[in-house]
Length: 142
Image 1: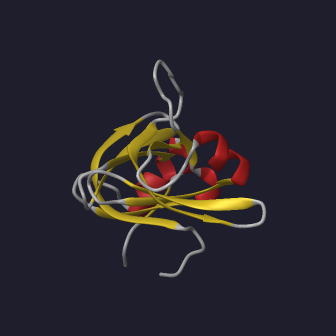
Image 2 (image 1 turned 45 degrees about the vertical axis):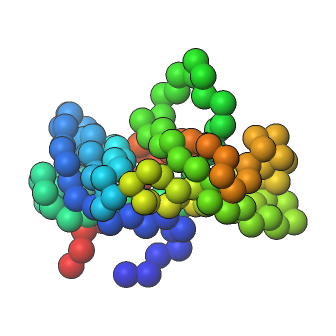
């Protein structure tokens, strides 16, 4: 499978919490990190999601936000994944920032160069990737 999403994570379903219209799906990534996705009940049925089923979680890099000083910050985003900046590749306007999570998963974010400077993003700096659960697209192999 080839997709344009910069972030493609392999994992398995850890839990499915169903609702009337949507479901909250916990995805356990290969390194043990977790993502929470919110998808429709129709998608849960179509993909035949169940605990233990292998899945692929996809997130486009521009949908990933970064923050550095999170003291006393509360967000509605379900996925706040703390890690360390691995690399920063600057372009004319934007930069691609790679964040390494403790379990070994890497997340790429596209942010402005101004944000890179304001947040002090450089290799070794602690940062948190913020991803809305509704921004995660799930797929199944096969």
